[in-house]
Image (tube, rainbow, N blue to C red; front, side):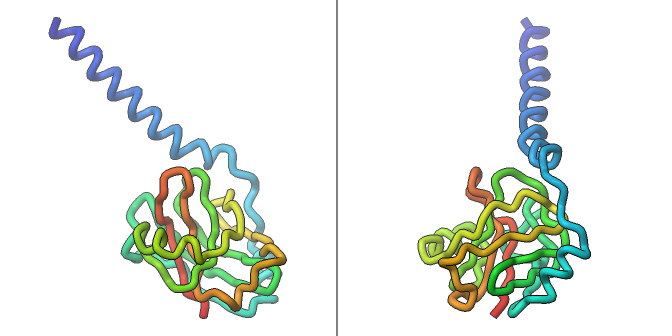
Length: 156
């Protein structure tokens, strides 16, 4: 009986760890190629606003963080740096800087979803035509699947 219990516990633990690693690593393994530094620099040259992602935000931790320079033009948002890998990341423009899940949920209805972030080193996203970046003050990366704050930055 003891061997059966030990077997179930050890194999259940291994299965759980494998599942968690799969959720974490699958987006990394299936991510498209990130834009080069030259491509991001070219997009950033058109920037009207800039900001920085920092690892030391209230809602960031060792699995949820971003670090680098974000540049916002009238048509694109470009990022040069790194964000923690994970599934279903979305970029939002927000009316104020938010640093936690709870703060974002309070302003999510007032925020503008720009699009999916599929790369974890550098990205460039087109801004939908109906969204004016000048109407917002900050942006954030949000994990839709798990309702997790990843990182944020003020740009105005």
